[in-house]
Image (tube, rainbow, N blue to C red):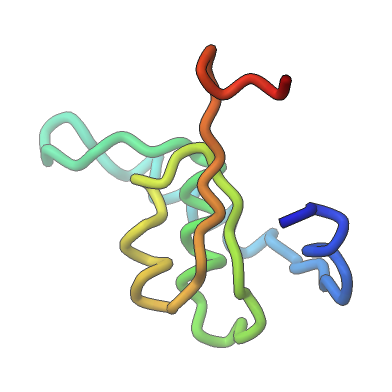
Length: 92
């Protein structure tokens, strides 16, 4: 699926509340002692957006890292476009 086609009828989402919450959660958490997986701040913001039930129009997520999003996408029935990188996936 072409990116240009995906962006038709797209809507920008104000992410400032998600960013603030994600930063607070990362600074307040101790991932090492709790045994939770490490997740980047950006991925946490994306997870919060995907999890927000007030946002109904998310149909797809394009990512290289499916593991950080598979649970929330399955729960919200969001299709994941999984892109792989590496020598065997060249654009030739």
